[in-house]
Amino acid sequence: MKKIKPEHIAQADWDAVDSPPLDSSLLVAMKPVSATHSDIPPRVRSPQKTSVSVRLDEAIVTSFRDAGRDWQARINDALRDWLREHNPA
Image (cartoon, rainbow, N blue to C red; front, side, top):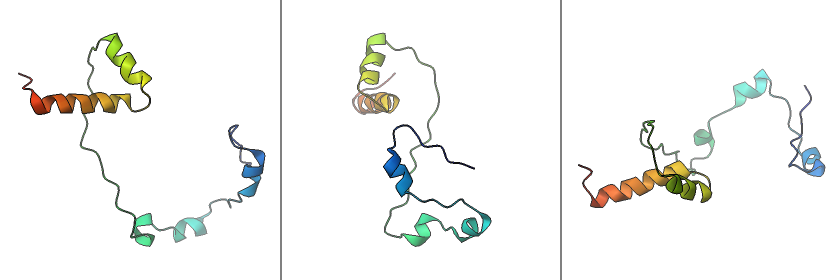
């Protein structure tokens, strides 16, 4: 199967990489990163999140979105900060 080069990668960079196709002998030999690189800390999982639908002012959503990726996480952080000093009831 021929690999398709993404548009954002230069042809010289694409040609410089020689990736053999994965076959069963390579898959059997694979080990988890944690088994070969003990210096890398384990991945920390974020607390369980709950999906909700909430109505926010358009200006609030626009401000967070315009600031870049992870805008929903930043809204979550802002609400967490607010809860430290306020009682939601």
